[in-house]
Image (cartoon, rainbow, N blue to C red):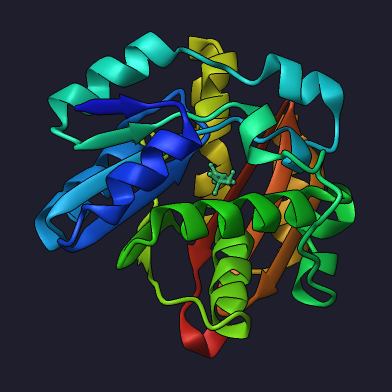
Length: 255
Ligand code: PAF
């Protein structure tokens, strides 16, 4: 695997790649969910590119950015095993030469759910994704459905800016208890992980939103929201200091 940290070097490399490229943007601390995206990209394209960039612009709280788990060496080993071709790991200085003075903003979809609780998060996310998509110029880019609102916004941006890339939505990968895999789970201990998995159980087994919220409160989560939208039931909750999000596909009749 080639590890590229300089964007100038990457752009030179990219000019000479004329095969089909599959791209997986990440913020690192990789888990089985990311690896399933890599496997799919490997099956569907010729060259797999993964980026690792913990994007300061999408954290609405400095503490969350500082505490975000990072382990580049472990990530490198996993990506080598997964036979990824390129790891792009640029610095914030290179990604934001303008100090984040130019930003992408969406004014509708980004204002609800996560957007209400994490002001500025989606501007930062869309801005970095646009930069990464421009840099990598992939044919296919892979995103998990766990961050469902993020996925919809990226699809919307790709359409709005006529970007020449196909967005591939991939199913959420879960642990044996049903907990959606997330880099932030690294901040949960074994007992918390089991409790965290009940978020998925509640979303699946309750018949209405009130029942779901009551059940989550009873378990000890602090609920930011549980809502039904886009044929999904989506939720964000706090378990102690860790914020969890998840969503399930609803039967169309129930929406
Ligand atoms: O989902 C993530 O890990 C991030 O939001 C992304 C898409 C890599 C942008 O920083």
